[in-house]
Length: 289
Ligand SMILES: [Zn+2]
Ligand SMILES: [Zn+2]
Picture 1 (tube, rainbow, N blue to C red):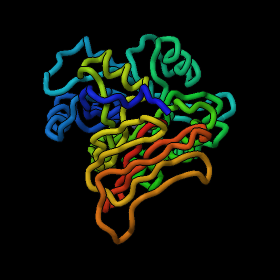
Picture 2 (picture 1 turned 135 degrees about the vertical axis):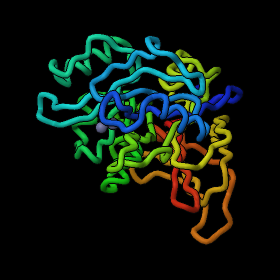
Picture 3 (picture 1 turned 180 degrees about the vertical axis):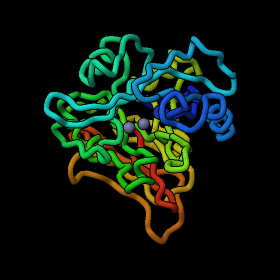
């Protein structure tokens, strides 16, 4: 297997692709969010307020981190299934009155990334995943996890991977930072990009050159000669995950923590990705290699 996704050399940038501000139902202004997230080592944040296509160029950039444009849509499609959908990119002409499907069309027509948000929490079905051929699926949503334990989207991601192995996996905060939903900095992406600039970050996200995490750090990911080599912060388990029952695992419940592993990647698996888990049960995921 060769990989164009995790080539070495570029820098890793910490970011979040799902955040709310006082523009919709969040509790913090952009300036407050910028101070908070920059203090936790973030390099970029997407603005994804409900039905509000942001325009970061219209406002002053504070300089502590890079702001990127996005939006969150909600509503039902023609089948009656309810969705929340994140669009990453700069959009015009998206109007709540026109409905969800028009919003999805606008995101696609304007070159945005279409992400299925918190599908477990929405009770989305496998058919819902396949119908819209999303560019990515939220595999972990921090606020949904906190509210009722439905933050995982791994099963939905697997449905999407079976249809398209390039489908992206994203771990996100969905931060609102209000008394009812106080959590933030619980899940983020680390993007392997040439620079922390809008085009470079979006291109790396689109190509899948990032990993998603609730804490563990992947220091390097290297694919060559049918093998994948990964180096991590100390973790308890490292898994190579394939479709259905396929997988490889190293680690132990009561053993020493590990900081790396090498796996042979079977050439007959349609996709494979890495999952690591630390001693607190916090996980991180690559995209399909
Ligand atoms: Zn939502
Ligand atoms: Zn949201």
